[in-house]
Length: 174
Image (tube, rainbow, N blue to C red; front, side, top):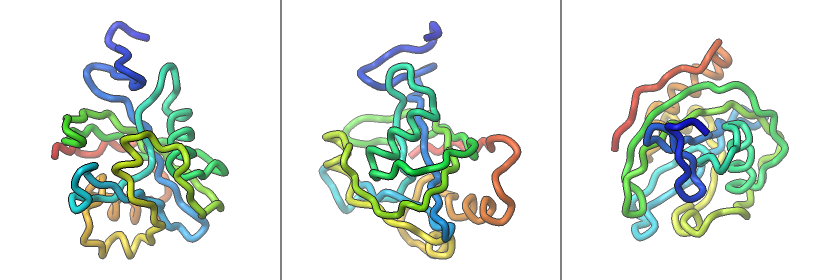
């Protein structure tokens, strides 16, 4: 670990940012899997987001992406592809502020049944389920989705394929 990296609980931080790996998981029909989350004490304060979470110990981002996907969805039969996007974000959740450096990996699967069998206690209180979305459904959605431009990003990905290198998205502060 570098001098800038410190261990806090099971999450690894660098420069004050929680290092996170997320998965843009597509099925054979090019639908994207999103999780439905909410504040633990207020299910009405809800949003949709990609599977993923913080690195544990000496994990690589790739290892964390696959572990988180398995824990949150039960899906293990995936082809992990390149990093599509990178984003810094800051948001309140469960009584604290989360400052994150997120990397979004492309992955494909034919396994579409989900089972969230490895959720943490906080995730059990704040994740209400999962759903496969078409790009069109995502574009028309009135729900809150993170990252906020996900429908546009997904359309570009499906039309043009993965970018030559990770695209840095605008920082999001909620």
